Image (cartoon, rainbow, N blue to C red; front, side, top):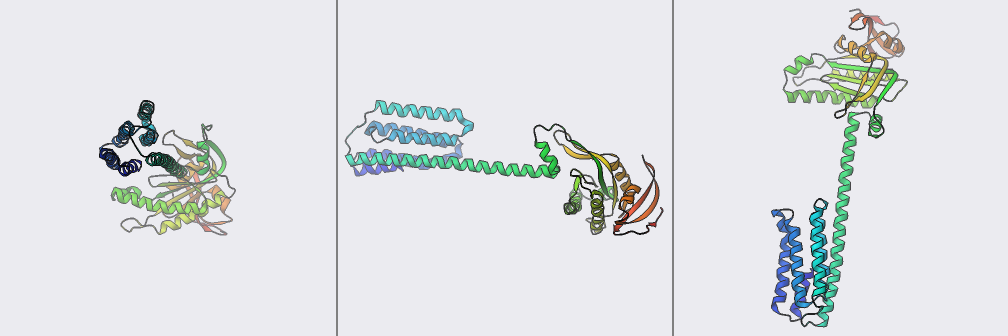
Length: 378
């Protein structure tokens, strides 16, 4: 803009033809500079600075420094430095230093006036240089602030994404503690909590007869339905290992009704499983085991850390699941004793359970007053 204006002024003022030609060539070069990006990131900004400095020297040598050309073209140097960015701070600093030195040299060494020029042309040139310099400064500041805002939004999006991923891996309260730099170990003991394990019956055989993509899609569909049920009941999924699905209640947030809440979830889980089919249309039977008691929960690992729960209640829940029946919810005697007034049970009888000896177990059937439970010894 400034260069083109000077070319018009020189033409109107009757200056030699080559004065207008110099400005016209400079305008053409400035217009084509954005196209130089295809040759590399450094070509365009360096071409801008080089052209501006050469033009500054030629114009000041021919017409003097009275029009403020040196100051205006110094602004183009700052724009180039902004484009070069912080990652090329040494090069940007060198470009600014060289251009500043040239501007100072031109002002000190060249006369203020060189050649005849009408007073109105001189005054108009100074005004145009001042206006264009201010416009360039504002454009530079606007661009810099825009880049800062875009960077801020990108950082916020990445932060929200990281937060979402973290809370998908860990319970929200545990994730908050893990982010605290003062936290070194997360390990909590819960004197009374409930654990549920669910397993797809015949999973190994089913997995051997299905493609990897179909298997992943099948498990994703099954567990997505289970996850929605967890959110509805306000429980915490600990992990999925193959076809094993583990849920806890009363961890990490203790609640007095943890066992009742997990029992209702187990009934809902069994109901959801009734409507599930695999890629062949076959039903997806699941076994569910439920137990209660003291547990320890914590985060283990450093890189691919995970939240897990340990304790006898976990072991018993696992045994209840593995020795259970398809489509049934098996619980030990202590769970039955705590829930018998609120839920309906069917007695299964005594089982020899690995690591636990003989246990009397029950099938959880539904919610309501059980009255006298029926004995179904197997």
